[in-house]
Length: 351
Length: 228
Ligand SMILES: NC(=O)c1ccc[n+]([C@@H]2O[C@H](COP(=O)([O-])OP(=O)(O)OC[C@H]3O[C@@H](n4cnc5c(N)ncnc54)[C@H](OP(=O)(O)O)[C@@H]3O)[C@@H](O)[C@H]2O)c1
Image 1 (cartoon, chains in turn yellow, blue):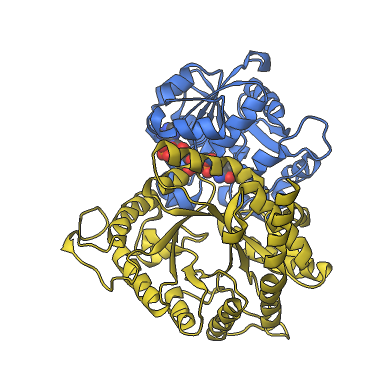
Image 2 (cartoon, protein in one colour):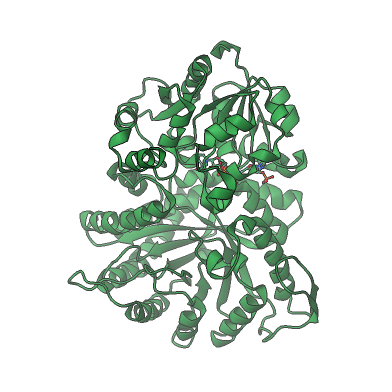
């Protein structure tokens, strides 16, 4: 049963380059400042979490999301600040702890860690890691991060990093433990891993029907019970675009989200997304696109079907204008979120 | 082997694709065994929850008890399986080279031939047919439909052994997909990453059209230039 009072709604951006009204592109620096503005707006509107992705590519502006979130920490009041996601495998867990503990200090306890792989892999060669070691890297670094997160001296040794002996790391946080999620895709293995470490889980549903993840969520709960590990409500993130007019929303999304997926696809050898696939995604799949009412109906449905505790909408894919991005955030905060809660409350009563 | 003789389906690889194929095979009425790289315990809960009814096991047992075996492991891992294990078996190769998991291409694949030819050469006592490789795992899961459904999607099936290809084509049909069939294992390249068919889920006429005019696609021309 969905706990409506504790439902969380997030917004995440990967830091796509913003477009000007005339179609030209803003600089990366301008795009970064736009994100800060949007995070402030989301905070004012009462959105629960604001997440910024980390990328090292020309089509995204943010490679150092904690710096962006640091700026946001000082101009926001209630919103949680997250990195969506921290690519732990090619990072140093000590640094990850230090950066987030600092962000947590700046934001008075609003930092949120999400560890995962992300949809790109460019950080591996960039930081000198071998992608084929992905699993080993992640497992080893997760184990170290988990020790550091306890905020006690750590003794540890592994394959990919210098050992630590009775080593303390600083700063300590005010409330003693960083809130941490593991971001996962479709692999059962990563569900089991998240259960074992006992972190919250956020699932990236970037294609297909959300219901297809139901068995994975069942697996999460079954594994938690079998292994006597903590169980949390599941979070999900998916792409979307909201506008006042349905057709406008669909066209903007088609142009931008599809372009974004096709560009990623190109580097991996996927065929481009067809209009049929795109329409399938917006009607029954995992693109939440349309008017506030339409998007609210679809988000409510996903939350109810999967029994979620949190839903994050990924916004700004492709090259959208500042006006499109800001208006969408406004619609999400002022109309979609209250409407989703209302729909869920109505269905709860009907039941 | 005739399709009627296939009752037991074995799947090596209990990851995203292996589990989806296990689900489709159960729906089609087969007995399904599936294994990962390690012990049964490692995958037992996953299999019980995601594909109840499938038997979680280990490679040797899966192969010994199956009429058809599907390779659904990362391409860079196939040499961890002893060639003798698949001796005399009808084997479906669902694998692709995928740099994100497999690493540097030259370390996994000899550039002079296609991945399935190399897998066949390694498992020389097996009869290899390539299919299920070019559709994303969630499309495989969501788009399986019964024969005659106008929305039914198609898979490319290819291999050197005529009878084996026909049997696998019938098997693919029983799993919920139309087929476009070739009798040349090397043609597996037509659906590898980079091809307009990789990651696409198409109906039979559309799939057939691209296969028939493969030499006119940009990818086809690139491949032709390399092999010239
Ligand atoms: N993902 C797709 O959409 C898709 C679609 C079509 C085809 N494919 C191809 O299908 C193959 C599998 O892909 P995937 O996405 O399913 O990968 P995956 O989720 O990483 O799963 C791979 C599975 O193979 C197992 N494995 C590794 N070595 C093994 C061995 N020696 N014996 C038995 N099992 C072994 C792994 O077990 P452990 O965890 O125990 O190592 C894991 O369960 C790849 O070749 C891929 O290119 C993928």
